[in-house]
Picture 1 (spheres, rainbow, N blue to C red):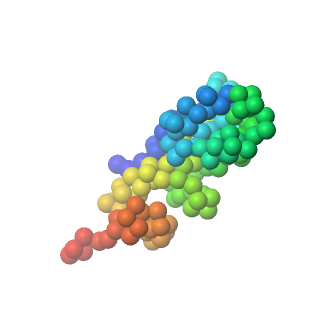
Picture 2: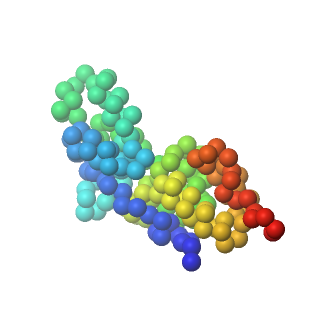
Picture 3: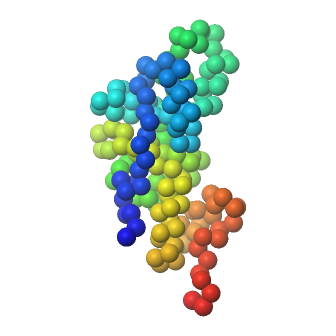
Length: 161
């Protein structure tokens, strides 16, 4: 049976606290899916505050007049791109496309980080959908630009159908 909720598709998020130093942030980015690290208020409550990409960190290292050792994750962050845990995979894909992102942070109704969702996770889900019922037109249209080959070959009907 294919997953039907985002909770079934989530990966651990690898969050760091907003006051983490850049060395901690660099290590988290090295391990992060899509090179995006979520920043949380603290690791117990996991309330999502911001995110940092590798490009953000590189720009801070190049352009900062402050001592780089004194910079904190919050100094190089941006507002996070999120979807809700209650969203459908289709809704999360629409958010990814509208923000041109391959990874989303998934939060609950209180803004707590639940995990990360990548385009690969959505592809795996869409492959299950395609196998079960020849994917809906929305998915064929939405996924075509993201397909690794550049062609929408995932949803072709098998010969004889």
